[in-house]
Every structure is written in C-alpha cells, then in structure tokens.
Amino acid sequence: MRRIALLLLLACNAVAEQKSVTIYVSPQHPYSLAYNPDIWTSSGSDDEGTDLVLQHRSGKADATLYVYAGNATLDALRASALENGKKTAPDLRVVSEERIKKNGADILTMHLTGESAEGPVAYRAVYWAGSGKYVQLVATTTTETDDDVQQLLNGLRIRSAKDDGRAFTVDFPPLKWEVKDDGARTGGMLFAHNAGDTMALASASRTDIPASGLRHFIIDQSRALAKNAKVVGEEPKTVAGTKVTMMQLEGTARDGESVVILGYFFRGAGTYVQSVTFTARERFAERKADMIEFLDGLRIHLPQ
Image (cartoon, rainbow, N blue to C red; front, side, top):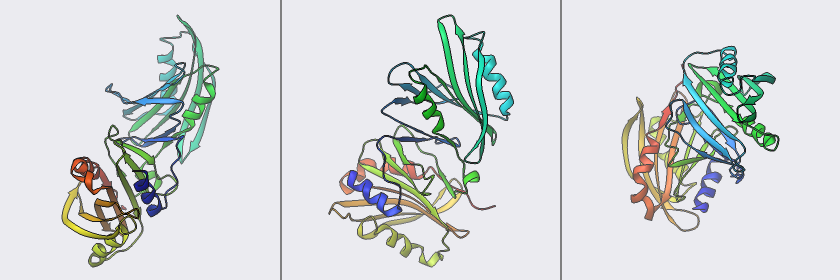
C-alpha cells in the first residue's frame, strides 16, 4: 500500500512522510500533536476530559492531553495547576514559566518541581485557553527524559478552521485512521487506515468552479491518482448541513493496480473542498464502510 500513499503524496504535493514523527489530530478539538513514536507510545482514554495518553518507552515519563469545555484564562489554569499539583507534592513550586505566542495562539508553559510521599517529582506543562475550550498537556519528567518531554510539548499546535483560515476540518475515528500530514504547511491533510491498505486525503483550494464544470474537474483531479479514472457512481449528499457531491470512480494506478476512489466534493463561495478515500479495488468491499464513515466526518467552513 506504500505505492498508493506515494501517489497521494504526489497528487496533493504533500510533504514526504517522516517515519520518526506521528501527528495526532484531535477529531473533536482544536489541536494537533507531533511526537516521535520511537520514544513515545500513545493510547486513547474513556476518562472525561482526557483525549490522549502517552508513555515514554523508558517508563520514566508520561504525558496526558486534557481538553475541557468552558471559558478559562491562563491565570486560572496556572492557579489550578498549582492547586492540583500540591495534592501530590505539598511544596510544589514553579521553577520557570513563560507566556508565548505559537501559531497565533497564546500559550503558557510551566516547569514545576516538588517532593511527594514517594520522592521528588517534576512536571512540564503547556496550557491554552480559548474558543470555549481549554487544552492542557501535562508531563512528568526526569533529568534523563527531560529533553524528550520538552520536544513533545513543543509538538503541540493549537489549530482551528477559524484561526488558520482552513475551509474544512475532519472528524475521524482515531482508532481506525492515522494522520500522516496535518496540512500545516501544505493545506492538504493525508490519512492512512490502520489496516495499511487504504488512504484518505482532504484538501481545499480557492477555485471558482462553475457547477457545470464540477464533474469534469473531479475526473481530471482523480486521474492524477488513477489513469483513465471514470465515474461509476454519483449522488448528492448532505454532510453536517452542507450539500456535497458523492462520487465513486475507478481506474488504474501507475503501477497497474485497479483502484477505487470514493469522495465527497464541494464547490461554493469561491472554494473547492474535497475529501477523498482511495483503496485497491479488491479491498473496496471490505473498506467501504470505513471510507464512508471517514467521509461523513467532513466539516466545511464557509466564509462569514
């Protein structure tokens, strides 16, 4: 399936895949996190407010991403961090802190140390508040793991369609799909199915396509992935209140493999948005439900 991923990368001019970095994009919240899977393992959580849990492979550090609904200030988050931390380490103190602007977002970083009943403890954390939500990435750290922890915290990026001008977001099941490129530099998000045999691409461009030319435009775009691509199914759909065109195409990839492209396509307000899934024809029946589930997560944000 690597050849299919390569075709997608070529088609959308995305950044080549970096094996040492995994980018987790929260399906419901305005952030992404880049981390090294050779250093950190990750898992989801059913705990309220906990979006992602990471463990350092040495076992000597861990990190948790918390996301809560509500309005809070960085000062309030700072006070809460100290209050909660002192339940474990009564003498917890702030060693250093800094307020910075990162990707247009106001961020608070803190380094705290103290003494718990089990011995010395140290934390590093990043806090953000805004848009009716607040995000906390809190990590335990040691001298041995501190560089890795700081690198992890630096990988947090606050993002939203409103903040970065993106015309779309994607709500997707993270247990089935992995983000290969979050689109920070290219604008096109690339995903891989965890089975390893299906890819997805979501992108937008400022293009004023007439309604009469949409079908032809989609076919031309699809032929960058599969030569001689032809439409075998087409119907109107409504996704999250926005009318789109669902289209299924079939063709032959550059390596000769028969492939199926299933996507949602939108044109309007001078914007073209596509969410496209792509797999081998022999896998399509098995992957179709997951492909449609992914496509149904498309959220289009029209200019106000």
